[in-house]
Length: 463
Length: 162
Image 1 (cartoon, rainbow over the protein chains, first blue to last red):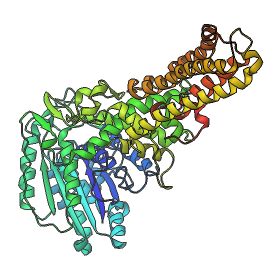
Image 2: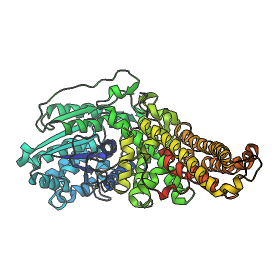
Image 3: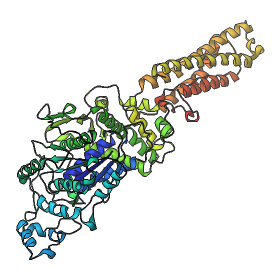
Image 4: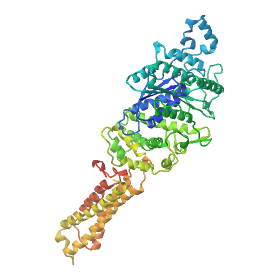
């Protein structure tokens, strides 16, 4: 079995970010390979860039020799190139993409002119479909199966199935914006059509993200862009569409929020579109994990997830076990608090190795400036930042990892005494205990080596 | 091996090491001093000198053993490493090394006249080597709690720790 996760648009990219962190933490079922694909015309969007960084780091972690008998980095990932796949190309308008000049004056061309306004046709699509799914679905339908531009996603899935593997494909995107709203049904339908010969070996799931944030545009009044006042009407129309197309997905998940969180700064797209992580995206990523964990041909079920308190999220509200996640969070915080400062001091020559027995035992012959070590440092910071963002929810309390314990950017423990009660449950695992356990004699098999050996040991002692 | 067992074994090692150093210092010191020097004082015979010399070595050895035990207990139960700055504690270890050296040299210097015995000058070197060198330095290399296992100078030269 192989898993495919396809993020569509900016919200999809943010779900992908959450999924990447959950995947690194070992929350995916089994040790299957996860293929990650992204569809986004706004290739420079800040959310996607942040996710791509985390993904590329995770790809590097696969070179760590942490052994096969651990959940740490257990899922292998492959990034489906081009990443992201940009269906619009550069500086193209809708007219360019559907080659309007071929159809001008014909009945099809006239119908097209009726369906799309001049502004919709003439706006360059570098920053996505700007909240207009009608543009997106036309472009995606045209480009997804275009022979000259056939996506490698279909080819990759066909290759996987050809090797005798069954495939579970999960799509994530919003139903209230542009790219996701256009892409979810279009890509699901196109994949189902393209892979019709293998229908007994594929299952397609999707998470439809309902409105959960809002923004107020401050400028660009004459430009075409998404407007949050359109989110609810867009959603209503989209849900009506999905109600009529019930065979599009084998499993459909709906996630939204009754409170729309205002995003910091409005941006049409591109690098400025760098929104903070949100608990809705975590739920959406958990939906992907739930879908991957289900049998290939599971019967359709209808479930609701509720939360216990209106203004509070805690582990009892999350459909996942906290144990592995908390262990991973401990591992990251132990690393950023205890290990990383030492490695920095050792690199700069301001610390002596004898003080750090774990360094002498595990890392003395490891190049601390090697890219994989540097990547892990970046990743640890990114995870802490993501977690902090999740827990900052517009006045509502999210308590997965005690938010008063740490700060992000740069990641650090504010109150090291709270380390033992990371998730609110008191344990015996203090920072000193982690330190002590790291120094105890331990034998790994010979496949565990290098920096991976140290990370594996640190992860194990954080259990 | 669990932590309690390891602690008990290390305390036993410190006690055994201290006893071994005491025996070595007694044996080597009595031979080095020699019969003639030992009985050079009035009313002193060799068996009486040996008796008082044993009291001297026991006092020096036990005081040194206390240094090694203090280091062990502090590193095991007192010091907590909850951030990188709390690691190492070599200054504390080195301070105890100097205390041990002061004991190895000071006890024979001040206590021997009180006991009324004469000592060969070489005994000061012997005590420093046996009590401070073996009884503190070498013993702490092998009995330091794991969280500080490379703190004693030269500890990294010895592999394998319990």
